Each structure stands twice: as C-alpha cells, then as structure tokens.
Image 1 (cartoon, chains in turn blue, red):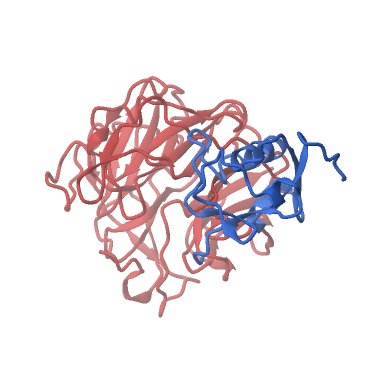
Image 2 (image 1 turned 180 degrees about the horizontal axis):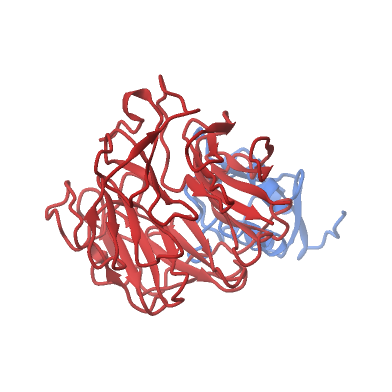
Length: 108
Length: 371
C-alpha cells in the first residue's frame, strides 16, 4: 500500500523481529504514518495503534520503558538508549531507511 | 463419539494431541506459537471450544492467546497485568526486600460456569481475573496485600502463583499456592485470604513451621470432596481434610517425598498420583527409573506404576503443572516430561505409553474429555 508523503504524515518503515511479525500477523516491513517529529516513541505509538497485540512486547505498557532484551537500530546506529522523544535520523523519518526493532542476541 | 484433547505447553510452543476414547492412536497438532514459552494451555469447563494459553518470552514479555474453536485458531487478547496500587516488596533469594514485578503468567484457571471468566496466577505472585474472555485483567489485590507478603520469597523457578483451585461447591472459596510462600484460601471470592500452612514443616527457612515461607509445589482436589486437598511440597506429600485448617504428611513408603506434580483420579477421591523426584537439585527420577506412584488409600500407602515407562537411564523431570486426568469411565492419566515425552495411561496408571517422545521440554499438560 502506498502512503502519501506529507510533512506531517511520513511513511516510516519498521522491521520487526520474526516473533513479533508472527504475533502481529504481518510479513516483511511495516509502513506507518507518523506525525512529525518522528521519534521512537511516536513510531511505537503508531505501531501499537495499528497492531494492539504488540502492546507490552516492545515496551512496558505502564512505564513505556523499553524491554531489556529489545534494541532499536537504524542507519547503522544503536538508538536503544536515546530518549523516546528524540527525533530519529532523517533517513528514517523520510522512509529511506527502516527502524529496526531487534531482539537482543542472547541465545534461546 | 467420546474423545480427548490433551493441551501441552512447552518451552518452545504449544501442542494439541487428539484421540478417541480408546486413547491408542493420536493426532499431533503443533507447534502453536513456535519459539515461545507456553507455561499453560487450558480449557473452559463451561465451553470446551474456549481455550486459553499463556505465551511468554524473555525478550517480548507476556501474551495471552484465546481460541474459540478448540485450538484450531487463536488470537491474542489482553496482556496488561498491572498490580493495583503500590507494588510493595517481597524477599529476594538473599533475604533483602525487592519490589513485586510482573514477569509472566504461570497458570490460567477458567471458571466452571462462565467461559469469559478466567483467573491468572502470575510471577511475582499475584492473582488476576478477567471477566471478558481475557481482554482486561484486574488484580485481586488482597492476596498480594496480605500482611505476610513482605516475607514471601522465590523458589528456584521464581516467586510464582502456580496453583488455583476453584471450589466446585462454594463459588466464594478458592485455594492458591505460591512458591515459596505456601497455600492460601479465600472464603469471600478473593476479598480476604488466610494462610493455610499449619502442619507443614520446611527446612531452609528460619522457622520450620512458620505461617508462610513453604515451597508448595502443587495442590490437587477431587470435585466430590472439596475440603480434602492434596499437596506436593518441595519435600513431603501432604493432605488436609478441613480445607487447609491442618495438614498431615502422607508420604508413607514413597522412595523420596520430593516432587512437583500431584493429581487425583477422576472417579476415586482417595486415588492419588505423584512422581517422586530426587533432590536437592538433581531433579531426576530415583535410580533412572521413571515411576508414577499411586495411592488408593488417600496417601500413606503407595505402589509404583512402571509398565510402559522407562526403567533405566531415564533422567527427566516432571514439572508441577504437567499432570492431568481425563473423566472417561476408565480414568486416563497423563503427564509430560522435561525430555519432551507425553505419556498416557488409559487404565488409571496400570499401563503407560508415550503419545509423543520428542517435544520441547513440557511445562504443562491438561486434558479435555469431549462428548
């Protein structure tokens, strides 16, 4: 599905780990409309609004704190420890690079 | 035609095993939710097509799944388990206070009357209830708010509320068990709770017969006799006949009185099953022989059941939620192992065979008897 690109409705791309794709029933990347400023928090808000079954699996539902074993990468950077209201890289906001939601590499 | 459906939770997904009343040949369906830990899958007594599953992951937390068609299809429901009010503290392994923090759902117990009402026992120990089919979960906070909760401490598996028994006669009464706090009873639908641990003695706590601190592994009850409850404690097999007022030991001639599971025959309230396990910490059957022990006298006198079970080189464990009985005329008994076997006895324990041998480690086994 193509989405209109406007300054306030950007097609942000999100790559979910396999377990969360299965839970949400999606294949491949997720594309979301996110109002500017495009931040991790705003992307997760939009993701959870579209896929309510993901609530609590990436961040705590009450505190909104990122789960310990989940990481956020984009543009070859680790954004996991950025504040949730910090704008994401311009390439993510523009939809040219995806935000990667990654399960920490810890066996299992 | 009568059939049975065995619901199996494992470390890496859920499986559903189906057979007719002969329980000789089986269809294996799964894995459902592959890769996730399934601590429990269970069914509503009020609607056998309604199933609930606790799905969890160290990475992605808790999910609750519901099926309305007997496990053919599933959909996620609510997974918000928020403690009511200030979480308070319990004791950590080192004896220091630590705040209650939700980790996972260990056990789901549907109401016998309403398929949309289901209780959840969670880690850190608390009791939740949903009355809308699992969409919204609300804590029954009086349990975690009990005056003794600051002294509860985790067992090796975590500080879990793992057993919920709903009294089949009195809807106001239920029993729960917490490792390592003990057993508790409510007579007012969860508004207040009484520790029911009189008669228990436990090594490893400062006061061996303390009001709380006992590592109760499992409780079991027969529906026709709800004041009689059987208990497999960390050590000791116990029995109460006054709804937990006092307990007495019934370990009798068991080769070891450590174990996890305990269950009661569907039609004989004094026929009880356990699987003795060597401990401390070894957690495999004595002498490499997997034996279910049965008492037909409500405890004290036990007989080993071995036909069809491995009697050499067997070093699996049988975890606390991994035994169940069906309600066919010839009562079937089922249990699962950490080695991935699920065994069935279609004749109350006399003979056994493996339904499956190579599942992931089994965490829970439930069985439905279907018309």
